[in-house]
Image (cartoon, rainbow, N blue to C red; front, side, top):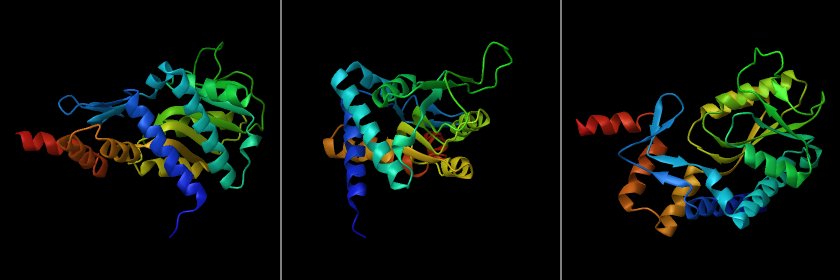
Length: 235
C-alpha cells in the first residue's frame, strides 16, 4: 500500500523529533543500570524530553510539530482540532511545560488534573477554568501503557469535560495495553515519536554502537522479558 501524504508527513515528523531528542541529549542508554519503567519493568533506555527546553529554537520547533500533529491527526478523524476548548495536564506531571507552551501557542486555557483524588476541601480534582461540555486535550511528556492517562481522563470526564484525544511528546510504542486502557474511553493517542523512531534515527546517524542497538532491539521486541533474560544469562 502506498502511504498517503499524512502518513509521510507523520513519519518525517517522528524522525525529526527523534533526531532532536538525540541531539539534545534527551536519550539515555545504560545497560548496567537499567531504568525503571512503571512498577515492574526495567529498560536500557530512558527519554527526558524536558532537556529540549534548554534550546529555545528547538523548543519552538517541538511546539510547532505538536501543533502540526494535532491539526493533521485529529482533523483526519473528522473532528476539528480548532474545536479544542482547553489544554489539560497533571498537576505533578513532567509534561507541564509542554502543555503550557502548547496552550499558549493555541491561545487556550490551561487546566490541571490530579492523579489521585484529593481529600483536602480546598483542592479540586481539576484546577483551573473549565466548563461542562468543553473539549479538553490532555498533554503529557510521555506514555507507556496508558493506565495513568485513563485515570486522568476519567477525572476530567467527571468534571464535565469531553476528552477524545491525548498528545504526548514521546510514546514507548511497545505496550499493547495502551489501546486496552484508552479505547474503551473513546480516546486516541497521538505522539510525536516512539522508541522505534529513535532506534531508526540512532542507527542511521550512528549515535550508538551496534551492541547497544542490538540490546535496544531485544528490549523493544520483548520488553517484559528483556531484563529477566539478561539476568539469567549472567548467572
